[in-house]
Length: 113
Length: 113
Image (cartoon, rainbow over all chains, first blue to last red; front, side, top):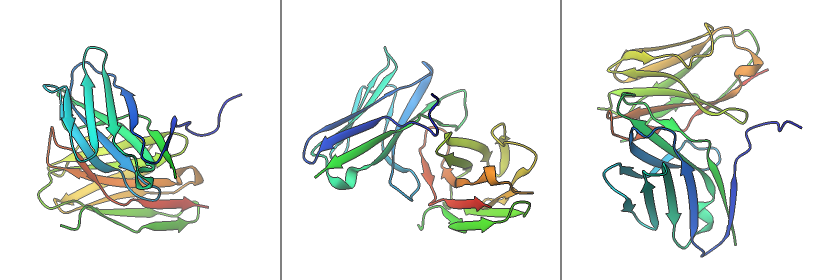
C-alpha cells in the first residue's frame, strides 16, 4: 500500500567507520552544490559546498565528490561520530534559477555506538 | 552575528485564526527564503525575495498565505485563515546572493488545531 509520510533513505553505520551519502541531482546546468545537515529540532546547517569546475573538495572530516558525467554528488564523512546522526540534504543551483537552491529529499544517517 | 532569527519558535493556534511568522535575516544578506517542512512533502520553497522584492512565489500554496519584506532586516509570513493542514515547521533562510549558500533559522513549529 501507499506509505504515509516521506520515506527517507537511511544509512546506518558503526561509530568510527566512514560514511558515504549519495545524491543524484537533476539539472546538468547546475553549477553549485551544497550539502546540509539537519539535526532533530533544528534548521538545516551548511556543511560543505562545491562548484562545477571542481571534482572534489575537502573539509574537516568531510569530503564532497562531484561527478558531472552522471550527475552525482556524494558526501563522505570520515570516522563517523554519534554527533553526525542527522538528515543530510544535497542542494543544487543552476545559473538560470537566480539564487534558488533545489533540495533533494534527504538521507537519514544513524550512527551506532 | 546571531544568524537568522525566527519567531516564535512554537505556535499553537485554532483553525481559522491568523498566524504571523517573523524572520530577521543576517545583516548584509540580500536574499531571503521561506520554506515549509513536513513529513509528507519534505522541504518546500514557498517564496523567495531578492533585495526585498518577491522574485518567485510559485510555492505559496494558496491565497491564504502571504509574505512581505518591508525592509532588508525583516520579513513576515502570514496565514489567514489557518487550517490544520498548515501544521508544519516553517524555516526562513537568507543568502548573500547567487552562488552562495543559505543560512537557515531555527524554524517555527506551527500547530493548527
